[in-house]
Image 1 (cartoon, rainbow, N blue to C red):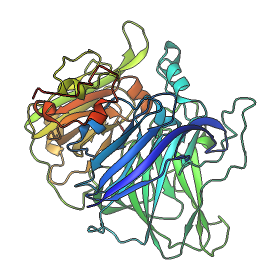
Image 2 (image 1 turned 120 degrees about the vertical axis):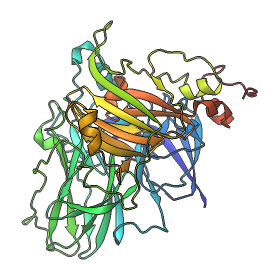
Image 3 (image 1 turned 120 degrees about the horizontal axis):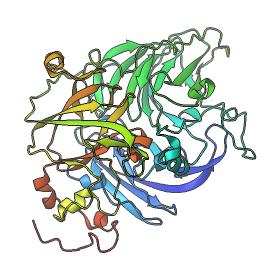
Image 4 (image 1 turned 30 degrees about the vertical axis):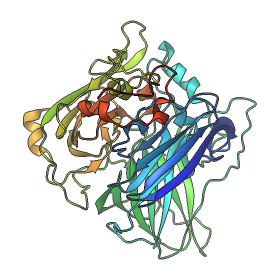
Length: 515
Ligand code: C2O
């Protein structure tokens, strides 16, 4: 295995992904940032240079960070400084992504794809070429402004409505939506075009990098073979239209087997299942032409399959089956996590409460370093769950909110045993669990008013966030910290470079003697 090195320089820039010009963030000058690739087992060494006037910090979404948990929960990189994330990609392959986990920065552009290829595993279906396609909602207002409104009494808990939808960081209709007077907008902004060679098979790696929007993805007239979910290879499932929630990834294989002409690729934000507020139909759809090489330029036979609403959940977990069969191991411990949204008793501001605690980030005192130095927990606004086992743990997620929430677990892939959109009833629901070969992934939608049960192995020493990936909900407190092997955290070999990011004096002790 090799070491692959990258440098990502983060800076502020005026960008216009959909024609509307605004200040945003770029990585190495681009939005989305460059795609990082490695082969399974390689070590990635990624230097992040923070050229902003505020802190930042990168999260490698879906990476296990086994043995390097300080790369996942850390003090942010101060303005003007840099940090090199070094981690292994052992035992994983597939479609991942990276994004800032500092405040709502990723919404303004600090995102990119992270692809781990496994050359010795060709995957469930052959293909000729692969294309990575991030899908995203897009806002015309800086996320910090949206956030301060959202977290005020005035919002009444209503999330900011996206202004547009993007495919691979490009969109049209940017000027027909919200454009403050006097702001430059190019009505002729063009979207990405995909060229298909007739007969070829394309593997499309889809990543939903949104703040809020759940997408339906389709290509007119074409069937999609779904072969990967969040790094897990699947027995191919053939669909016309694929739901992909925030933080999730799918690979689909599509064959260029239609008449030689043009078809639309569509990423349609779901408005039936998620209250997107004011966003209007045209701006909730991103279109990108798929052009057959040498064909006619017409769209005459392009048949929109995007309006066949199926339901408000992920693809039914009972139909998605891992290609490499694995039964869910029995669990040594059970945990119940439930949440709802309501006004904070003191401020009356709408917040999320998870087991009655509304999470507030504390960037100066990350839990992992408190545990490392055996310091007492500093805040009561952070729920920390510490299983007593290194073995499998079963988690029952109970969603008392009426909207769905895409939950992502850092550092783990979990087995999804079941879900439902009614009150969980152990006697009735447990017998229906799929334990024989359940879907394994790292981000799963918990239906509105419903539940999800998953199992994971609590043996990745460290502190791992389990949270709704809707960025507004993270900031409203919908996050819990799951601590694997608390007893081993003080024994970690945390490098000075990670501790040095923290405010001087907090964790700077060069000689940690206890263990
Ligand atoms: Cu991509 Cu904590 O998330």
